[in-house]
Length: 449
Image 1 (cartoon, one colour):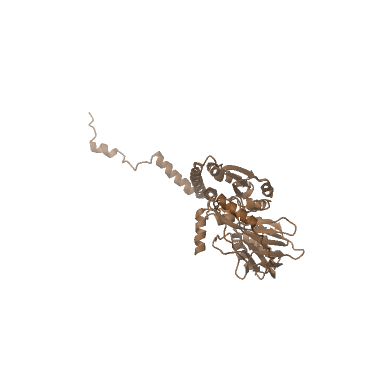
Image 2: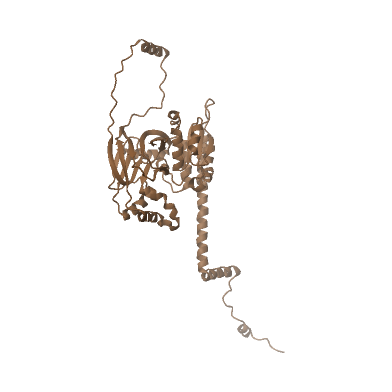
């Protein structure tokens, strides 16, 4: 009978256990890292796409939060009770769907329209189909409590031109105007609202400013040709090489960030030097009259009114003393410039000025090609920039005479008009625009400083 092997020999025949094999989840992770290391180019592109997608989703989420907060704030205005004898305020919106490359309609309906409807206003939306239609629609517009412009600089220029061309413009010019920036160029938004890089926030802030009711008076320029009807502008008039070249910048979109400098470089190759000659007559600033109080004085008692009527009836009419017409001290000068600009002072609000005037900037025509290219890039960001060496004038009225055969275009609030002899007149504090209360406060503090 065999004897069983000793325990020690049995243990010696067993295989020593090695390291534990990775489980299926661990193997999957290791395989993923090996794949990423093998295809690192595809992996890099994938990571970048995921990061961009996450940022885009987060941005949309933040925009929705901004819209929700704005709607909640507008709901507070809508919940306010009004007396039964008072009617709901009517707001007429002039919307340019073609602004911002056709995106204006979608931007308005998603960001501004819900706020206006929640505020309790009786909103009427008028959509323009072609250029110049807003001017014609303003002639047929009935009474309204608010006028809201939804678009860019061109839409603003059309609406105020149609408004001030009306026969009853004295009454309609007292209607407050709101501006919702939807266009590619919205210069007026820098004056009325705080700076913002988020488009949704900019639109919602502008719409809420209309509901808050704070307004500021803005100057208007009246530009009148020899035969044409007057045109009105909020920003100003530009005539020269920088404006002409700035219009062509978009043609060089394929050059990316170099398109601005390329456009100005190609402009110097076609024609140089670029001089614009004209004759300018102008009047100096005028003293600002005191602002009329909007509060109505209480009506006098009946016996006081009867006494005044009797006194006026029995008193002898005063003899009219002929007064000599005040002689206007016109100043005249010949100019040769690379660009001429006539602008209002709306960009920097200051309600403490004692004089009314518009700024005339006459830039020298002795500019090198290098300075022309650099300065042109700066003027794309700040069209009202008046560089060193320019002649700056202050005037309440001016007449610009061009030589016969002069070709080219004026830029009136970013809109093109054929260059011709014109008379430019300042209409101080002509229209009132809704303004963000914080922006108004900052403007007043800057004026005090």
